[in-house]
Image (cartoon, rainbow, N blue to C red; front, side, top):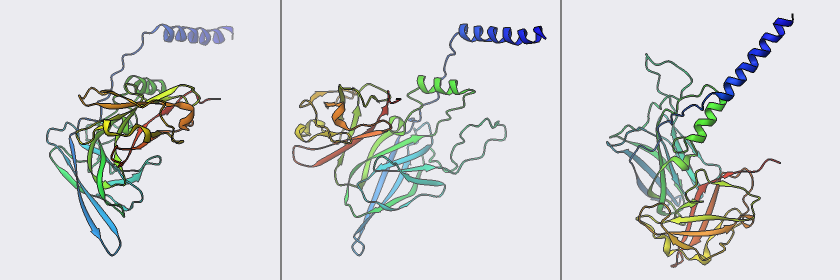
Amino acid sequence: MRNTIRFPFLTLLFSLWLAGTAPAQTVTCPTSPNQVKVTVTATVTFDASTNQFTYQYTVANAATSQQEVADIAIDFATPVSNIASPFGWTATVFADRNTVHWKATAAAPLASDQVDVGQVPPGLFQVKPGTSLSGFSFQSPNPAGPVNSYALGFADIGTADTEAGAEQIEDSCPQSVGGFFDLAVIGSTRGSAQFIPVQIDIKPGDTPNAVNPRNQGVIPVAILSSSAFDATQVDPATVRFGNAGAAPTDGGHVEDVNNDGLPDLVFQFPTPATGIVCGDTSETLTGKTLSGTPIQGSDSVVTVSCKK
C-alpha cells in the first residue's frame, strides 16, 4: 500500500521538476492575414421615391495577392438597412462601431489527404487572387462620401494542444492573432457618410492598445494622414475622444508616428475624462477640419487592471 501511494507522488514531483526546468518552446507564428491587395469599388444609385441611396460593392483581389479575401468591412454613417451579401457570405454590423462586416462563411471541404484536427477551413466562396466578387450592398438615406474599407486574407492559424499554448501564440504573435481592425488591410471607397472617416492610432507603437480605465495619466492618440487626408488640417479645438468626449490636454503636435512620410497629428487625452470603462473594445475620436467638415475615426482597445 505504501509503495502504491509514494510512486505516483514521486512521479508527480519529477514531472513538475521537468516542467519547471524545460526550456520555453519556440513559437512559430501563423501567417498574418494581410497578404492581400484589395480594391473595393462602389456603385451608388438614388431612388427619389424612397429617398434612399443604394450602395453596391465589388471586391477585387489583385493577382499579386498571396491570400484569398475572407473578410470585407465598410464604415458607414447611420442608418443603414437592407444589407445584402453574395452567396456563401454572411453580413453583420460590429456592435461597437458603425461598420458592416461581410465574411465568407460557407466552408470548403478538407482535402482528401488532410487530417481534421479542428482547424478553421477556408471559405468556399472567398475571393481568389486575380478575381472579383459583387453582391455586397446596403441602403441608406445618407449621400455618398469617402469611407474606410477593410480586408482580411485567409490564413490558417493552426491549432494549439493546450490553452497555455494558445495563449503563448496570442502573446507572441500580435501581427498574426488579434482584433479585426488591428490586422485588416485598410483602404477607401465611397459609402454612406456624414463625416470624413479618418484613421486614428491609440497609443501609437503599442499592440494591443492596452488602457487602464483607472489610470490618472493621459492617453496619446494620433490622427493619421493619408494620400487623401491631411491630419494637420484638423482644428485642435474641436477634437474629442472616448465615450465622454474628453478634450485634449494640449493643442497637439505633428509627428510621423507610422513612418509613412506623412505628418500625423498627436494629442494627449486625460484618461479619467475619456469615460473609458472596463470591457470597452474600441474608442472613437471626433472633430472638425479647419474648414468645418466633421471627422471621425475609431481604433481598438483592450482594457486592463479591471479585476476587483
